[in-house]
Length: 312
Ligand SMILES: *[C@@H]1O[C@H](CO)[C@@H](O)[C@H](O)[C@H]1NC(C)=O
Ligand SMILES: *[C@@H]1O[C@H](CO)[C@@H](O)[C@H](O)[C@H]1NC(C)=O
Ligand SMILES: *[C@@H]1O[C@H](CO)[C@@H](O)[C@H](O)[C@H]1NC(C)=O
Image 1 (cartoon, rainbow, N blue to C red):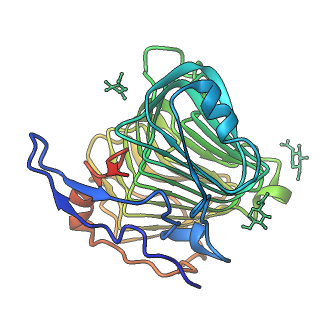
Image 2: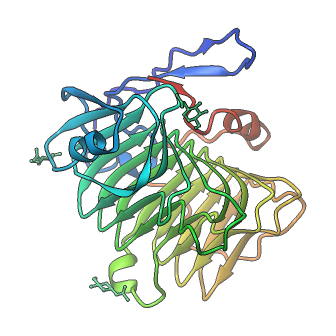
């Protein structure tokens, strides 16, 4: 398997008021983390012509269909819409590009990359991925507010109906009720047992529940930071999770727990003084190379890096 080492990150130190490391990346990067790298990998529209958009109508038409394409969002877009994303597509935001009230739906397609975007206050799921495979969601910020009823917005990132080979990395989930769901129903083991999802280097902050809620499939959850959330990782109905080197602060209600015989193998975690109550499972080793960050270094590697923080 061959991939262009994306993140051949020329790490440049910014000398602005915000002295964070700035990661540089290319619109042609391909997935280099987790399940999205397997079986030929996830390349989106890498190498195709770049289309730039800054309106809802231009975005909607640019991302439609399965022809290989790179779509760069160059300005903020507001509206009330769920935009359907075709296969073989890379969508990237430039300079903090923000979608307000506009969500993305990856439905029934394969090979999609979504990076460096901010998406907020979507009535519906901010990002929904259904009946899809090979999806990389990376360096995205997702949020709404906690002033509406908990069901007013839906999930920030819902992955349902048998999705396989998806990686969620460096996503900043915050200020929301229902964070991220894998598997929508207890009665669909037939389509959902095959689900495979990696969550790595994400920052979950001030989320009421679902960080994530995970049914049936196989999930690798490593090097994430959880601050001040309610319910934590919920392994459900036969899910097999591998939970490694994550960090919770003391403000979470419960870090890792099981409902209806969900399982987890948990190693190297800092549960913030609370306990893992999930029964041990059988998923002990990820089927791809992993370089685990040491638990004590996870917070500084993730907080401030998760979100739309890359320069493209
Ligand atoms: C999308 O990419 C796949 C390979 O990744 C290819 O088989 C398929 O033909 C592509 N679809 C289009 C419409 O280009
Ligand atoms: C775009 O939205 C962001 C919020 O994510 C805001 O900080 C920024 O000022 C907006 N830019 C413009 C040009 O309106
Ligand atoms: C269960 O999955 C099948 C496809 O495998 C789908 O047709 C059906 O609608 C799903 N049922 C529920 C309750 O979601």
